[in-house]
Length: 320
Ligand code: ADP
Image (cartoon, rainbow, N blue to C red; front, side):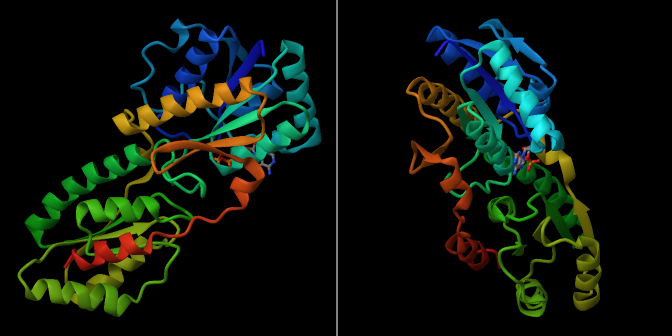
């Protein structure tokens, strides 16, 4: 293997830069040239590639976002777009591509592999919704960001005896809500994987908690559950406690990656290059029980991640 490319695609996640750095440094140390592709699959279609050196990835390990930029590329899903992307790879002699992104990006990697360009996926998403991987790059940082912000919200909620309904990212997955909710001691955690009994799990819990002398509350809601303003109104009406909704939004994706995400990204980037060198393709890197493993992308995409009900029940038991 003489030349590879690395790209970041789909939603950005803190730690993508650390992954790019690890891919570039590992490849160069193994005598492989590396191109950085600008704006995900769009960069392959438009031939926007930059040769990477050891120094082009200096001072990025601590930066959020992605220095290669990211994009969603509908054109890549068309035959014409794919043809152009494959041509770009052939023109530059690219023999493998490392794709840092989420499940959508892995579907793209699968397609590209089927068109003769071997791809390896590195799971980067704050949603932690890649089934074969216990913790995706960006998830730990995002959970810490949510905790930091909700701690601030708690100060003001406590001062006013208020209830704060907080919406965090996660359209289809409640991992961020669950982890951050547990870490801030939320009175209730609402996730798309599980229905919530409004009266029993919110109103009665708030009342019982209030009877023991605590008069401020955090209700953590994953984006996929939705309607936080309406929920806040319903809570205020049912309990009489002043209730405000806060949508944390895109701030959750930003910020300097945590030590854990930097280390994970460094390990996964290194692992991905070694896989390409061994002639492997259409694989996704994952971590399980602290060990790096890899899965066929088709298999990884078909897997379902079971919701951590045990963690959810523990959070519930100790939040009263
Ligand atoms: P994420 O990787 O964060 O899940 P997206 O779902 O937006 O992000 O996917 C990122 C990009 O991956 C898309 O814009 C598209 O270019 C590519 N992609 C997604 N699904 C497919 C697919 N089924 N076939 C080919 N490419 C895809």
